[in-house]
Length: 355
Image 1 (tube, rainbow, N blue to C red):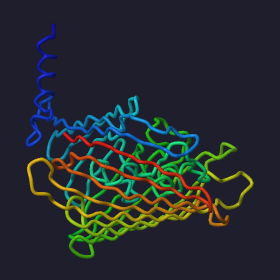
Image 2 (image 1 turned 90 degrees about the horizontal axis):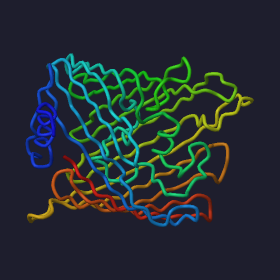
Image 3 (image 1 turned 60 degrees about the horizontal axis):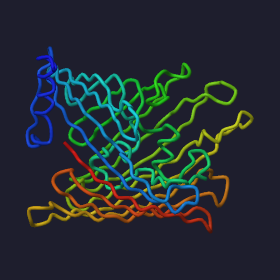
Image 4 (image 1 turned 120 degrees about the horizontal axis):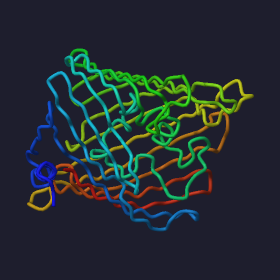
């Protein structure tokens, strides 16, 4: 039999479930207010690769989000994820909101780099950011397909890490973000005494048009146990927004492919990658479905500019059907070509529950 206090917690979580999507209840916990939410993304993926799974069902994400508010100055977030059959901590930070010009965060969060990684998985219109096709490798350094998100994630220029973050708005047109982190990602303790830096500045050129520049400096341990550094630069342009008509995102990133570095090399091989995603959100009349959104992605990457015929191109047509808000069903067909003769395909269907 449940104890009264435990029963109260269970009932409280129940109040924050799908039945209160329009206005989720808040629970008082000591000196804070906690708001519960989450997401559940379930995927079917196929692969034409000889070494890949021809079909695969799995839970891509199963996250519980706890947003904590202590005062107008202090808030926080804790976000465990149970996707892929394992427990992993995603966002976990303590944040001081001094004003719109300055917010300081301590904990685990996304590094201040490219727009494609900073966008939430509840918003993006690609099922897999990296274009992952099971059984496909070959991209020198990051492995997998040579796509923008594969480079930035696997070379640790983007994605989550542990440290400090400062962000805010400077006037009506400029926003900034800067992070100082361990460089080892979400895996825990740092592996050396070095730290990784990333920064991003965005300028609103007109209503719905934002241009941004970003830089990331990642420290890593070389083959001789010495600390080395890789640097990447990028920029992106965004026109429109999610679920608001036509939406275009274009990004370019270049830098050092440090996973190809060798102890005897004076220079680290350099990579170059670009990506564009275009979609159009069409509202629907009726009670069952809210909108439909066709989309298209093109992502190209070259892992070593000094070597020929090693680049790859990913093309992804798809469509998303919205039930309500961010609750939707998405379909992508990833077509990846590397070299003159290699082409692989992956059909992906994913359901998105947002609560």
